[in-house]
Image (cartoon, rainbow, N blue to C red; front, side):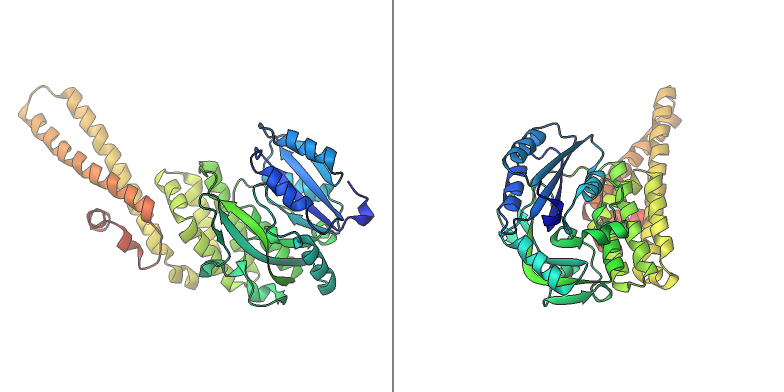
Length: 383
């Protein structure tokens, strides 16, 4: 590692089982034209060759600071990196991503120094690992991935929450305000980013793509714990947005919950995860009455309640069918009753098929959700 007084930028890289991609990531950092950097690599208990690769790179380049910890999660890894870093500025990199050009850190450092802003960042890009396609233009909900112009932007005028990797952060500013990542399994980045932006009030925007984000190379499996942490992160974002009167961010956060993660959250509801429902209620409770009605939550709430009632009815029917079969002694009454249950089972199959359709297609758009529910299911839900 180079001397502290010489370190201009500390690149913080948390790593967990990334032996396939970490070399490309490190090469893109070490080849930067800005040489006064350190690369703080935190291995989060990898079980592959990630740590061995880090050790090899550290022997070859003194700017790499390898740190090993037990598997405590990416937030703890990044926070430990913040505490170990010595550069004037911090920047974060995921081990499967890379810098698309060699002058990225130099450009960001010079712009940050000249502007005097605590935060300075550029534009975002995505790389589809399946096709090799690079995307630099995005849908409206990702408006913040690009900037209309270069210069100082007030966060009150921007109100975006994604893409924190592409920004330099003044280290003293981060430490002074104790800006750390919340210990969440999912959605830990936006709360850190939003809090940093609200605290800084403004940032310098560089009209240049400075980060390449890789996707399509691994499957994300959602568990109850991940779903709860997702909702906790959304709650943190929503709370900060409401408290600071950031109306656009409130709407954007609501969009994230209902559109981007709606299917994942809804699956938690139909699996009867109590905590999932409780966190949705907490998020909903932050919003004022007018916004709740405008966002259509009552309809969403009704849909969930009705579906849960139907699930309970199905369970009762199935239990009843089993009981009748066990007690049947050939009496016509039982024969007739079993026939009725068979008809009910057919209805159950329709309901289950409809439930799968809802889970796959639901987008929760107000006024549009009914368009995504098969007609037979609508008749059962809302008759």
